Image (cartoon, rainbow, N blue to C red; front, side, top):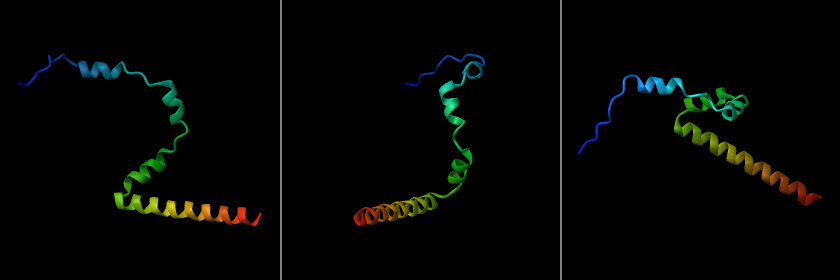
Length: 73
């Protein structure tokens, strides 16, 4: 059985116009560089994985370098 909700004229439009942005969310959004998000979303999934693997290799190099410094002390 299919349920048909009653239709209300322009109810969707009216609901959108009464939604107010959350001030906490808006405060955090000021500090987000959306250009980086857009650039990342333009990449293919494979390209994103390649970047992730490069980042993981770099993190491993930093970890190893930190170990070497601590061993010398």
